[in-house]
Length: 302
Image 1 (cartoon, helix red, strand yellow):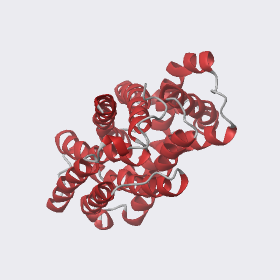
Image 2: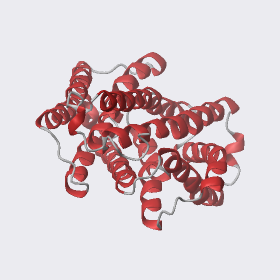
Image 3: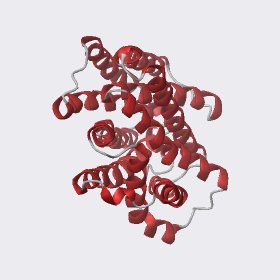
Image 4: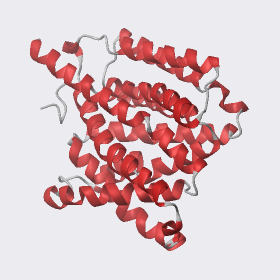
């Protein structure tokens, strides 16, 4: 029991660190697409060129881990270039606080996929926590329809949630090691996306401000793509995809605070209520006894 509890606490620690790192993602992305000459295509290019270059030695040393093309493609699509393009485009239409729609839809879809694809049984406490999280997400993003992006932003954020859920389930079903999954996503995205970007954009990025490029390179390429994805993958491996995914509920909490401090984007009162509900729901979902967690022995738990 003590070992199971220690393992669970390790998973919780990884999840909290991932939320802390990713909390700044929508703010830094919004800073790039709304307050600099960069757009979503530039940010995706910067992110994966940096992360892909740094993680290339991992790929060269470990290869693809015997994975077939299908899980590789699903992981790259899940949190690679397609995900970044969808979410960054959404953030160009709506304020950073509305990013709550992405982790909200991801949590719901991950729970559904877990139930029907991995046969992970969720307790009543876990289901209640996920339900509370979704209610909070709905409130936090309730004003998006009256914002400039409207349905376009909603569609892009929900698409991001769907892709993220696909990554969660793929890494669990194929038992992909967290570091290898991180390397595959970053290097694979760089290999696929870089030629397309250069073909259509050429060297136009070289004329952008160095400071704007540096901010995106460090935060997107190193902190989010490598550190954040690695610790999140470890959390999912230990706690299971449905419960590990609930740590994403902290992302909009941190994003809203940072957006207010750094971008001057003040959340409406209803959004603040939603954020409080999200936090409560995440806590409820984590109250389940570790002895019934099916994900505690997943890859990366050692």
